[in-house]
Amino acid sequence: MKDSRPSPLLVHRPARLLWVWPSVLLAACGLSPLSSSGPASAPVMEAARPGPLQQCDTLAGLFSYAGTRLTSAAITPAGALSVGGAPVAEHCLVRGAMNERVGIDGLAYAIGFEMRLPRQWNGRFWYQANGGIDGSVVPAMGQAGGGPVTSALSQGFAVISSDAGHDNRVTRGPGFGLDPQARLDYGYNAVAALTPMAKALIAQAYGRPPDRSYIGGCSNGGRHALVAAARHPEMFDGYLVGSPGYRLPLAAVANIYGAQQYKRVATDPKDLSTAFTQAERQTVVNAVLGQCDRLDGVRDGMIQDTNACAAAFDLARDVPTCKAARDGTCLSAEQKRAIGSIFSGATTQNGQRFYASFPFDAGLASADVASWEFNAPLTRDSGAVGFIFGTPPQDPKTFQANDFVLEGNVDAMLASVQARGGVYTQSAMEFMTPPNDSDLSKLRSRGARMLVYHGVSDAIFSVNDTEAWYRRVQARDGAQTADYARFFRVPGMGHCRDGASTDQFDAISPLVRWVEQGQAPERIEASARGAANPGGVNKELPADWAPNRTRPLCPYPTVARYQGGDVEKASSFRCQ
Image (cartoon, rainbow, N blue to C red):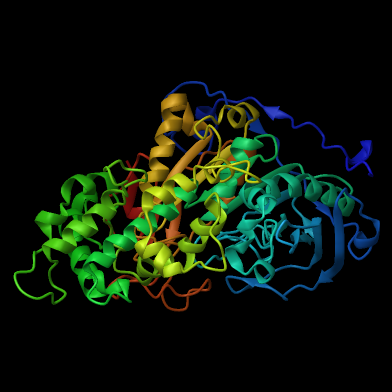
């Protein structure tokens, strides 16, 4: 087999690290440190150098890497793609496949990918970690946030996107879970295999490898980033972790648990949404706002202080209990018990909680929440738990999704995602989750940085779960955690976007400045997406908001608090 290592002339030059005190850098930039922990152990990396594209059309014939086949390489003209209404510059589009094989189910497998290489390169590599169950090669743009107005490609990164080792059209969605290698590729191996190949391809196209490398994504993409940080901390310099389903198997079982609770109070057993109607969810939102809206200093339809709200709001006390038939203005006692058990965190039959609680937030009445609460257990979590995460997997010939979800034994499902056996040598909790997830010491010592964000109204992956993870990191590294990893909650935002929120923000630029200049993000300005927004309109915005409302996203544990002035502007709030 041909040696896959790059030639000596193309070996990555060692990163030169600039040892500086973050407090000095922040003061020079007019910023204040999040903590006063003294000198940090995290160095600052040298900035990437730009360079021109040297090869494109010839790449498919010249590039050689073990197990990799390039199927095409051609120039994409400027303006063929756009982000936020702005044209993307000319770039080289490369498509290919890696590790082609036939699975134990007789189906064809490969890690399909595409790379987009800008004509004018900024010297950086971006691994686009995709969401859901992967299974398709979506355009390698490197976008983040709701209704994005920028992307890694737009900023000059070389970007890769992949299907994580399976094609949903071939495997019929979650059916790839029958193949043990496809499970591992999806869990962690695709990132590990593609990243060195992508860097070698960049070296071929530009005459040198990337100076800095980043990985980012939301949902399962956020999980990919956290897993990469744990398994291969040497591969990337910056990590953008959005709404991470880093305990995805447990979250999927928890969502099935929720479906079973909703079934108990649904007026139509074929429609789980009748257990908690849109009108009833809005009633709960109104009650939550009544208790929590002013905790940040102003009544504006947003809840910035999530933890204070958890203490201030009580479902049983603050939402009217129906004295007669349900009419949307109250909840029955049975509903309160069912809904309360879901938001308190899914439990086993003996009452042991196995997934995080969920906060009551202003985005609860959104369509995004309804989709995850009432439809996803039947259409997504059923197949994920049944075929991808469970060992042994279910028999596809006899599998009935509705029966599995609504009648299945949650304790048995929980055991299955932690089991291994036969050809399935790793459990879902092993191949899907980051090992020793609170230990980021290797990232810190290299000078790598991690920026994490999560919507407070996320209905599938709890922001409380991400907060608990971050607190474990803090428990290990103390105040120094903020020197290399920061966590931002996005009030009102659903899963990765939408909701009654300011969900449009550029998290890529702050991460690059942090990695390459040592400027830690003290706040990130986020915008609402009202009428005529170039990134797309958020239909969940309340009618009384300004269409261009802005708010600061604040690093945990600080909260955006109103200081006075125009309530629609981020400048009227301070992270405290």
